[in-house]
Length: 495
Image (cartoon, rainbow, N blue to C red; front, side, top):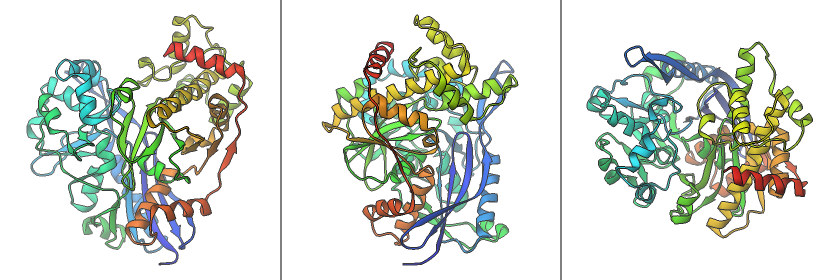
């Protein structure tokens, strides 16, 4: 076993990207952020100048990734590199492997109405039976179906479909494959056959020839191409596919292996779930609109995607645009001082999905549902946080019903753990202990997968012990009161 091994995780999220250097001494894993850069949607005029389209600035991200790689290499010899990103979005390559246009952002409006239109071709029950994935208009399946409906010329010339991390891995290594965890997010994959859902895709008019080979997390994709490595002064290190979906990597860093511990990967999205050995695809999971996404160590993540701290992030952006720049800590303090349970929202209400004036939308929801309208920032943020905690309870109860296992505790990882008020609300709403940490779970899970692929960590059981030795956690005990039960009943009615 090597000492002082240096591994690089590149983690791209919806708000920012970073290059995280992992230092592994055989017992503990340390983290060093060597580069951070902003990320976000870019609006571009389209449709004959009549509409705005939402894209990712993919070349900016590619440039910043290379900068991070170069800075990491200055710290010493790297053993490997792994990349993870958000799910569902993709790029299409032509016959010469050129990228066809800028990849769309999952919040782009071209998928409006596409879920219902797809159901008119293939019934909802059949789509779920073949994919086991939660229905959301942002899924790759509905993005591709929208392209079919709009007669997109890109589909005519496309030869390869690559999700965002698969695209970057191709640019890093020259290998065109799709990693298992990210492939499952597309709703184009059949977890029962272990292959792309060819029958479903054909019935929806989506080409099947351009979907690549699927490889498991931990696959060594190949060495970094010389054209990338040499200008940056980097040795030809192996590029390893971790769980390329960021949530898959985050869950890999949860320091608990028990099946009766639920987890929440908390950030822009809140992904609430439990790890299972087999996908749960039945009438009940369909009714709950749950999802079965791929994980590490031959597991699936039975979960639900919830519009998480996006509600607060977008509110903060709105207030900043009006000249009131407030930190997240300040907004949380205002929320803590606000009146409890004044108003509640369904965090996944359709109007909350797209960028825009989130405080106004929250106020409109409360008004339309006959509730007091939150009139100040603290009330708006408290409404969002209490509603999130109560929606977590709803999801955990559904997981218990589907698995037959009582979830004894909830483990929260990711950047959302910094919001201690939400963590306490979650404990209070669910009546379960909440353990938070590590914050940098996505990068940690990425690095652990690399270390296992290199033979530096023997198993995932050992990886859990590495996390426990390396990172602190905090426990929030539930202060469950009848008021939370009453609020929960109100939320269920809103749902």
